[in-house]
Length: 215
Image (tube, rainbow, N blue to C red):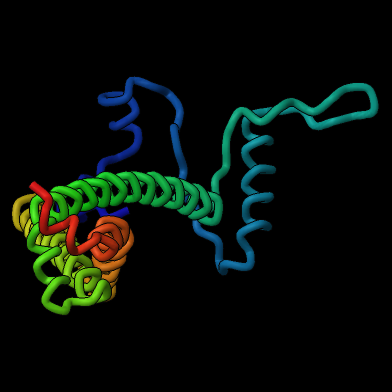
């Protein structure tokens, strides 16, 4: 489970039970099956031995069997629990990331609205000298993409820096894959286009005469 073996202490179980845990029974036993395929059979044998040692009654025609006073967990069960926990954390992180993208996208949209409003006369002048609506649209879309990509670059730098800081100070192993960085920039580009499209479309549809008169 990622424990440092240099920090592991081995001691007689009787000493641990009496001196540290103050109990007279074993709280856990680790067993290993001969092969992976023999895990189920080994689990059944362990259960039979423990029931016999704990003097638990088996089922008869008139009485029911005593319930197990122990729990047996296999690696498959532990792996399934870890996978379910990891999946849940992934979903939660995805939700947080999605909310962050929406909030950031709304911020980009507001910035682009302000930019279009403040540069209305500039847009009118450009269109009056021959700029097409597509040119205006592309201009503001590029600005929105640059805003989101700049935020992506800052986020990637901070993320990598934080990861290496954790590795340096906490000595945790880290692995940064290239596809995550590429995906980050792809998401940033999509966010810029998605949230910058409406303000850019609004700017492209301005009437040049009304835009020049705008105060």
